[in-house]
Amino acid sequence: MESDPDFLGPAALAKGFRFVGDARDGGKIERLERYSEEHGIWDCTRCYFCNERCPKGVDPRDAIAKLGAEAMKAGIDRDMGAKHAKWFVTSAKTTGWLRETELVPKTQGVVKAIKEIKFAMSLLPKGKVPPPFPPHVAADVNESRALYDLVKTQGRDGAAGIVQGERALMHLAHEGESVDGPSHPYDDPRSFVRPYLPDDDPETSDQASPRL
Amino acid sequence: MKKVAYYKGCLASLSAKELDTSTRALAPMVGYELVELESVTCCGAGDIHEAEPDYYLHLNARILAYAAAEGVDTLMTVCNVCTLNLRQANHQLLNDAALRERVNDNLERVGAPRYETDVDCVHFLWLVAGESFAQLQEVAHKGLRGLKIAPFYGCQILRPSKLMGFDDPDKPDSLERVIKACGGDPIDYPAKIKCCGFPIIQAREDTALGELIQPIEQAKEAGADAIVTPCPLCHLSLDAWQSKLKKQTGKDFQMPILHLSQLIGVAAGLSDAELRFKRHVVSVQPVLEKLAL
Image 1 (cartoon, rainbow over the protein chains, first blue to last red):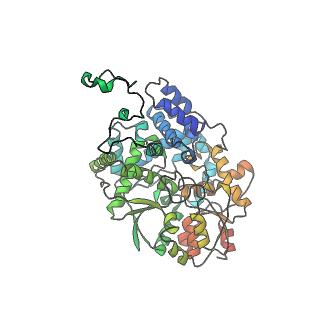
Image 2 (tube, each protein chain N blue to C red):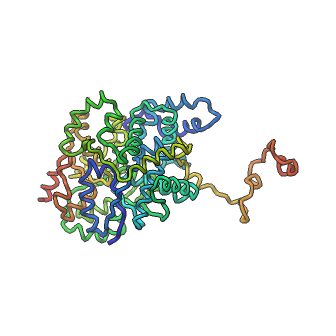
């Protein structure tokens, strides 16, 4: 990005998720630690230019969101960007709405936030620093609190909840598919040679044997 | 008068109340009866999507469900970020029956309505630049007297276009058409479709300010009297952080920033109590003086 030439960028971060999301890769935590540093995941402005431009429909922004979700799941949340994201979750499950004024100290820490007091005071008369008390609480907020507790028991934490690469999937053609129902992809004459798999039924081993 | 559910989001409820009052005053004039949703929460602003994606999906499904429960087919937003978050969740739910069933079961378990009847989530800009454009032209009778207005779209009303789809993401023209309908003169400049830096303004202020200065500086150079934006987050950074740009670069732009509903509101003759320009950090007075208001 123009204002941060050292930003790892969408291509590298999307490639990074290829490894983080691969169970065979042993370096998940180190990678997430590295990507959570300055110029990494939390520098992304979510401008979505990368999704718009990617000629292969990779949707790199969604890969970056997956990295963020996996980092948070692994407890790697030291970065101010991660703390910023966490405060939205806390807000939603307490008052329902963003607790806007508390967002600054919760993101930047109290010491840095105190340095911002002069700036905050300049915004105060314009109503841009809404007082945290009384809090702005949504009606039926007990529902959003209960939803949080409920979804946390359903094992879809981290990247599992994010859809990436829909455009690429959408463009996949299935011309070899039979009209009577989907056939096995290896039955398609254009497919790769089907490998022999150990649990293939010996009765049908003719089909399982490689086409040579 | 068409009934639509109105999701105002966090900022219009708090630091951008002027967006809420001007939208409420304007909507009936262009043909919409707003049904405010009382029980809804924050959409997560992209942050919950990243931190707790499954919770994000449920929160947004709950907002859509409460809109559907009002018996309307449209959920109107006044914020780019809310629009993207709601449309993204809606897209997932409408295209995956098993996922929708699971989410609905969860909603039911916590006492919320199920999301059964589909609703479409649309930004107020898309309504006034689309189906109610004729009403807009009638309502904007007072005009902006050729005022030079720089349209600033922001990101998440244009991209990803597969989810948004109203404007051409590279050559949008809805704001320009609205400005012209209001009697203003739209200014063209490259950064109008770029990022305002807001999502990272607290975590990476220097980087964010490097993004923020581009539209303001370009609009100033192009001779704009004011910038108009459909997004309260863009509004907050463009308006409130101008003092930081001055401190960092020594450039004092004094560029007034208008919400879309205020721009149309001025042309439609809304009252001061509805427009609430006193809540802006950068004074809008020079614009009002040009219009002799």
